[in-house]
Image 1 (cartoon, one colour):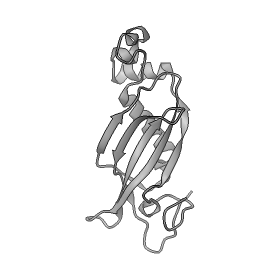
Image 2 (tube, rainbow, N blue to C red; image 1 turned 180 degrees about the vertical axis):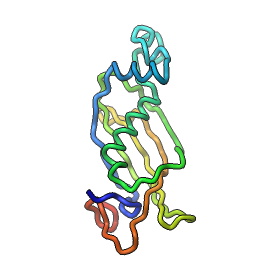
Image 3 (tube, rainbow, N blue to C red; image 1 turned 30 degrees about the vertical axis):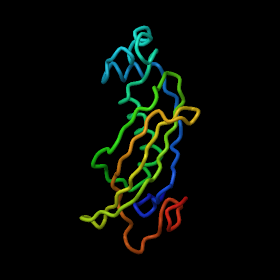
Image 4 (spheres, rainbow, N blue to C red; image 1 turned 120 degrees about the horizontal axis):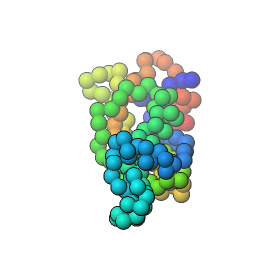
Amino acid sequence: MPRRHWEDFSPGQITDCGSRLVTREEIIAFAAEYDPQPMHLDEQAARGTLLGGLVASGWHSIGILMRMLSDDFIGRSNFLGSPGLDEVKWLAPLRPGERVSARATVLETRASRSRPDVGFVTFRLELLDAAGKPLLAMVLSPMFGRRPAGAASGAGQGAAGRP
């Protein structure tokens, strides 16, 4: 399968990355290992919190988003990593039994000034509930390899980077 390079991305481009069901068991297992707070571990204790019930850890939500992006998007790209996050916002709680989807929207692209074989793509990444409401939004600018001169565009996209 052709791999997306930096040249294949353009502002406004949106990539949907499938959906998955989030279970009570996985919420509790993640929390027990990495974020053992009552609202993530115990349904009765969670009812007494501001959130009013069991919810996934925000870090779990990020992990779910990254897994979905890796499976359906990053793994099919000439992805070189990211120097960090510009913004993370937890917008609404992720509850057990929720079917979530992931979306990546290109905000801008820029070539690296120091490495001609690398470009940056600024994305807004979102984890959405079943109704399409954002639960989590992140802005980051990962690095992608640039296509060698004279190479054909990949991922079934034209020169403008649109599917």
